Image 1 (cartoon, rainbow, N blue to C red):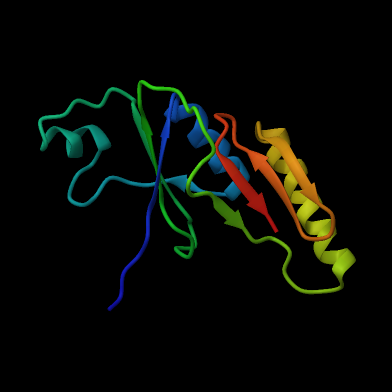
Image 2 (tube, rainbow, N blue to C red):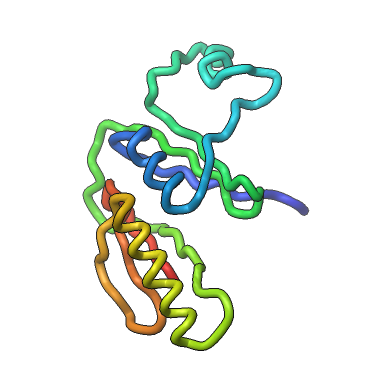
Length: 137
């Protein structure tokens, strides 16, 4: 069986969080499903109005999962039960792999992430601008 996995994140500000993931992961806005020209047109078929409460993103290379960011009224109150592991290390010496992880973490922090922990030579734990945990390894 062939299938794809999408990840949906609850959030307070879908536009802000979408900008973070577009910057951090290189994602792009997902076009609305065909034959709809706009996301508002697509939502209207369900009797919904486009209130800016959501953002839909995709990997332009079509490899990584799509992200759906949906505004919810309640704040994040605990550790995520599921988090993203973003693998950036690639191949090379341990020092080269760690340098790529550190460089990626610096880009994420510049985009609005916070470093929560560092496991030297292996991975760095971050929180996105709304506190959702993710790891770079």
